[in-house]
Image (tube, rainbow, N blue to C red; front, side, top):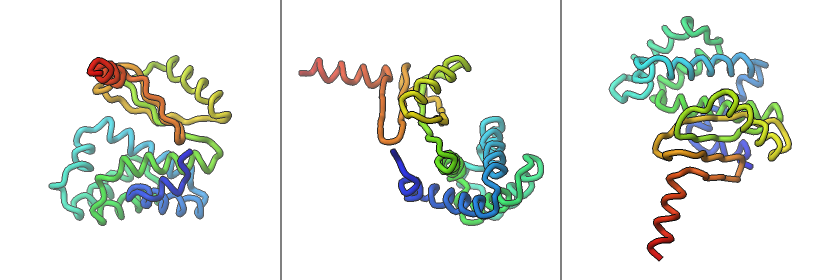
Length: 184
């Protein structure tokens, strides 16, 4: 299982750890988590916001101003609003998605939960998500949060990473194995 030490090693992990420590000290883990969820949803819903975060052409100062203007619209708590401003001013706005994921893992670990990274070729429906959660809960012996993403490049199937275990049941991997076996 990846420990918080593993999360904290990456750049995004260090930022997420700093945010998590601050949120924990101020007893704001849940409100910061909700604010990060709002930011994550804004990234998914708004092409303009996504471009602001990912574009290297947006200066640190412009990004800081944009984040400050967005904070009230997204109802960000003060800790998160200040944090995204620091992220922008430090030239690390492109790390926002990774910071959100790392914070979620730290918060889940703090609550005694674990997180599984799930990659599918297309989005799962609610029934599939519920069934997958139940199977992973049984396997892990505790509640499991799902960090889901879609990658059409896997063609079909699913890739699950739960702690140090990786289950790759993607069609791409199966085709690659078949091609290797045929080469002899």
